[in-house]
Amino acid sequence: MAEQKRDYYEVLGVSKGASDDEIKKAYRKLAKKYHPDVNPGDKAAEANFKEVNEAYSILSDKDKRARYDQFGHAGVDPSYGGGGSGFGGFDMGDIDLGDIFGSFFGGGFGGFGGGSSRRNGPQKGETLRANLNITFEEAAFGCEKEINLNRTEPCDACQGSGCEPGTTADTCPDCHGSGTVRVQQRTPLGVMASTTTCSRCRGTGKIIHTPCKACNGAGSVKKTKRITVTIPAGIDDGQAVSLRGQGNAGKNGGPAGDLLVGVHVKPHPQFQRDGTTVLYEQPVTFYQVAMGAELEIPTIDGKVKYTLPAGTQTGTTFRLKGKGIPELRGRGRGDQYVTIRVQVPTSLSSAQKEALRVFAEAMGEKVPSEGFFKDLFSKHNKKK
Image 1: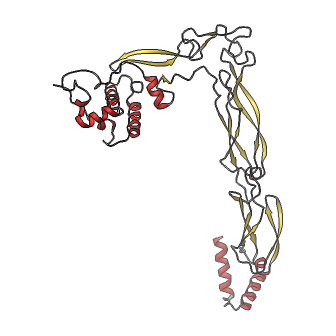
Image 2: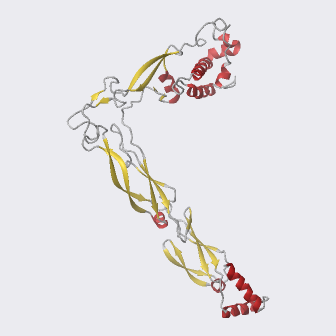
Image 3: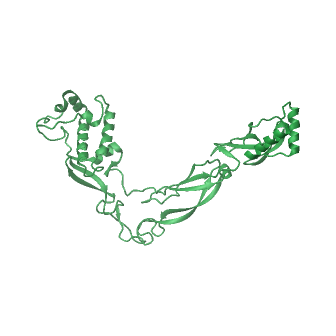
């Protein structure tokens, strides 16, 4: 009795009316999931991979899909029901999966190379990361800081070649300098060809007979460098500065990597920041808000004078234009907003209490008895 096959649309998880693009996307996802390289020794995954390839071979072909939609499996596999073998008319044969996956995934999958990249070509060095703490004012106006950085640099003795001075490397005879070799493996799906890293040269494409003594043939050495970091004016907490070419050395003549410096701004005891805006609370006395006063307001540029109008209410906010944070790598500055906060005295002398009582009576307020008044301030002081 012939093996019962699942519906091809069900295998790929798409509807019968799915577009070519939807079918291709579904196939790519499942091929990745069940590929033998991802699931070594997993027979169930191998069977699923075979089933997915079979379904895609039919549904990706316009004519075969039309016959399948009309006649089912019998329309695309004459041997279906007769004990035949094969992929429903799809013969894996001697297939280079590097070509298949290279066209889908842009350069290889699980060791299957796209055929165009060379593992021993120039490679950019690794990006390094560091952290830097700066003050509120340094973030506002910019500064220069120095940090110690551990990184790899080209070996001075061999100039990055890895060979002892006066000697040269030979081209690897196994991969002929490409860094990869082509291997074939017979599987239930047919003979599969793939590319993998050359084991003889470890992907470098060259054989070093006399390694450099200074770097042991690596072509690079570890060094500690003192780097100057320029912090731009207006930088905020959590942002980073990128220094090109200050990372680890590249390989095979490739450029050095970059350095990313994360900036952490220390809190200020008086100011708060919101983007380019500086926020500040100015303490004043009752007399100052009632009668008006000349205030000296702290800013990141220093103190500035401000005339407080008589009768200003606590919580009133005014703006000091251009006294905020400079725009990051731009023109102009933000503003500083100052909020007035009236300070209530925590203790009063007898003379001060009497003065307040007289003032309250002049304002038409009902003044409590001296004992009540005394108790009121006593309770207030205890809470404090």
